[in-house]
Amino acid sequence: MTNITIEEKLRGFISEALSGLYGVSFDTKDISLQPTKKEFEGQYTFVVFPLLKVSRKKPEATAEEIGTKLLESHPEAVEKYNVVKGFLNLSLRTSFFLSQLLEDYGTEDFGIKPVDEKAPLYMVEYSSPNTNKPLHLGHVRNNLLGYSIATILAANGNRVVKTNIVNDRGVHICKSMLAWQKWGEGTTPESTGMKGDQFVGEYYVLFGTKLAEEKKALMTEKGLSEEEAEEQSSLMAEVREMLQKWEAGDEAVRSLWSMMNSWVYEGFAVTYKALGVDFDKIYYESDTYLVGKEEVLRGLKEGIFVQDPDGSVWADLTDAGLDRKILLRADGTSVYITQDIGTAKTRFRDYPIDKMVYVVGNEQEYHFQVLSIILDRLGFEFGKGLKHFSYGMVSLPDGSKIKSREGTRVDADDLIQKMTDQAYEVSSSLEKMTDMPEEERREVSRIVGLGALKYFILKVDPKKNMLFDPFETINFNGNTGPFIQYTYARIKSLLRLAGERGIAPMTALPETGGVALSEKEIALIQRLDDFRGIIDSAATEMNPGTVCNYVYELVKEFNQFYHDHSVLGETNETVRAFRLSLSALTARVIKTGFGILGIEVPERM
Image 1 (cartoon, rainbow, N blue to C red):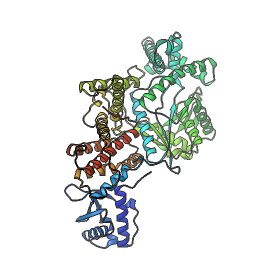
Image 2 (image 1 turned 90 degrees about the vertical axis):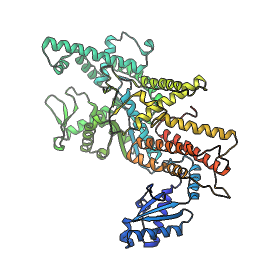
Image 3 (image 1 turned 30 degrees about the vertical axis):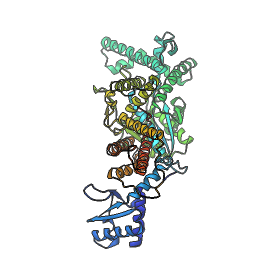
Image 4 (image 1 turned 90 degrees about the horizontal axis):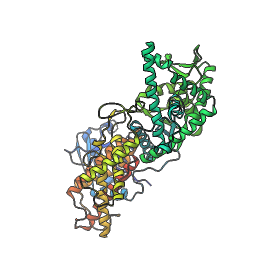
């Protein structure tokens, strides 16, 4: 169920007025309203300059004419107006604002559009982990961005499929497999008490250590460069041989691969659940790379690609101002872009996708530029329409990037636990949640810690690189998740107390006597009514930060109102019921807005 916003109603009124005055039809979407500047009287301003060609009058006269028409045709909404040059400032009746609040309050799923079966189908790909290591801080930003973009698009009425491509084969996966085969001594996640993805990740790091030792020895003994040493490395030779055996279907290699991947998947599932993200469809590189190889070989046969003397296959993109891109190695094994070709073809076969969105870091911009061109040259109509949602990298306070292969990663699991523990410690120091049972206190700490993490990451413009400091995020003041969660919990406490006293929110206009609204009450109603437009903007821009900033501004607006106006202490029953409805809708919008971002809110703190 949806209702019409104040601005939508006003645009409709203005469209009617223009049609009656000038005999012209205006689409309401083309009628622009803006908040009236504080130095002028009114709440909404309509700029009349674009209408002078049809009114054939001066700006002031045109504005006067429209203002008079609105007063005549919609006195229930427009109380008065004033004209400043070509700007028509409209003052609306308090009864109109009150009516809008009750309409919004009575709207189920306020702010959320129901999914339209005729709406575009978006497929949003995020996460894209490798099965040789656990998820880390960089993956956390990826998952939170991808999940929230998908939910924002769905909240705006679009059809959405959340998808993941698991990079479960290739050179890097063989590195962890070879390391466990050589030095694992039969240990398992169960025997060591480790989480499966973390267990496998240790062997990926171990391989990197052993390889570095071997390269150093080769560089010293033979005077080789680092690149030459890696090329002559016996460990890398074994890895390449293992990959060839895997692609050839070697039973022993495939069995090892299946066992180690199963450990990783169990670990991933735990992390995804803790992060609160999920997927509608998971693809695996091991399933799609062969489709990609078939397309590459078809492209080679049709003259789209070229083959070098060593047998490697390339896409020559120099005519597009780019470089040559390898598609198959000399030994016939696949590279990342090979599976991307196969995955794209498979996805568009599985779903009637209108827009494919890849949530991948900005270091892969060139990769997706190349992928788009290659798919287009292979004859896939969707090639040009792929969207790479590029986001910046995450750095630690010392400025270093997260680097898993050196073993200096910040694992997602450790980060989640750290945030939960930090929330518990901060709340204890501030003497919050002290009246709760320990189990509830721990659960609220989890909600607050994760809320702090998610909000801190999502409020930043996705395109920007960001510095992440866990200790800055747990703050009950300022533009933080805990500050917003605490405001929500305060409102819920107020509503519970009202219920205990038998005080109900207003659900219908009072039969006798109006409610005189203050400027802050009107401002809060306007801010709440903006919620649907915010979701629309966030979906159009694919920017979760738009929702973050809106909820923060809403909370500030509410706190200003709450500071100046008593709710339960108000003696006028009608005013008290109104303010309770205003508070209840604020809480609901906070919860819905945060829910779209994948952030939970505690009922008390």
